[in-house]
Image (cartoon, rainbow, N blue to C red; front, top):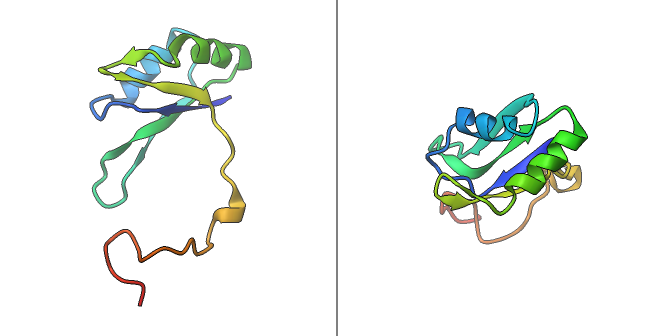
Length: 101
């Protein structure tokens, strides 16, 4: 079961995350989402655990708890919606501050 972890401190390593979740069961993988330009963590990531019961236990035990100076959010990851991919979301330009035209 894949878990979403939000509000992660920028100082947390994947090893720290793995260690915290291994207290509830086996951890298959850990990953952070990083900014493409700066390679800095965006403050959220994912933990994958093979057993649903272990994952539910981790959610109950860690959601809303202080972890390395921040209160983290832990819940079941939702699948990314493919319907939004590749679609222009509008707005006033891209992230780099350039205009639309």
